[in-house]
Length: 187
Image: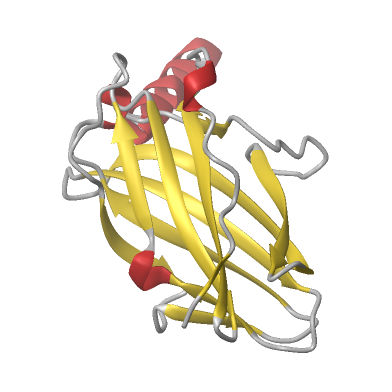
């Protein structure tokens, strides 16, 4: 009986996870103290001012209930200023690469959770956490690396960051390290 129960559980878990699920881990600025999936952490500086902190992680790639290849990228943003910060999901991009390092067609941003406007505000002294979902151009296990480009604004100034991930079980090639954040004033 115990053996049959273990077999049923193993089959159920395998069916739920599927052969196309995979996990991604960040390759830089890793915060090992944070609970949950491995995350990267950034001190956010806009126009030379420290404005907050960001944690970015992925819960991995999977097939949706309709069979579409998908992935998740989560964000936690803390605002350390007296002004509102704005995350712009309209300019969010996810680049994906295969095992040879070849860029694949871009992933398509599909959903923001919790549902709401694409401009996410972080109140002065506040914190917000949200999830973004992308439809992948290939099966999740065909993605070796991915890089999410995201933008945070304070007034007319902005902070742009590229966060790189590698599929678990892969080596992290040196050339996959993303460029440093590019704070750029907007006119």
